[in-house]
Length: 83
Image 1 (cartoon, rainbow, N blue to C red):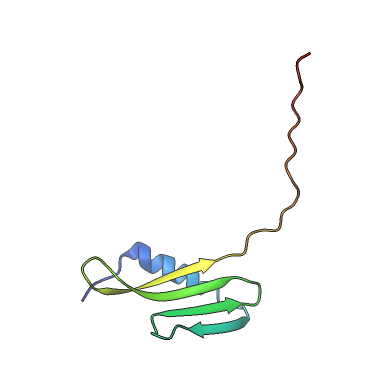
Image 2: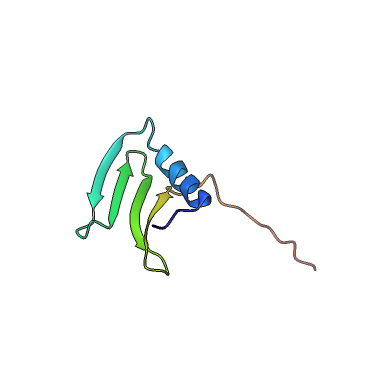
């Protein structure tokens, strides 16, 4: 049996903790049951997947995909031309 590193467990726990007090808009399970996509009502997506490491052992992977922040304005840069 392969043990997950503490870093991986903390990363997964942090990603799953984002589900607390959130409303789920959609859940999609891949046909081969290797990935679960949970879409939250605020546009964030939690991906839970089973991936195979270099030794051939399955491991759980979690990624939280956040929507990009709304643009607050465009940066303007003015150059002074030397005459």
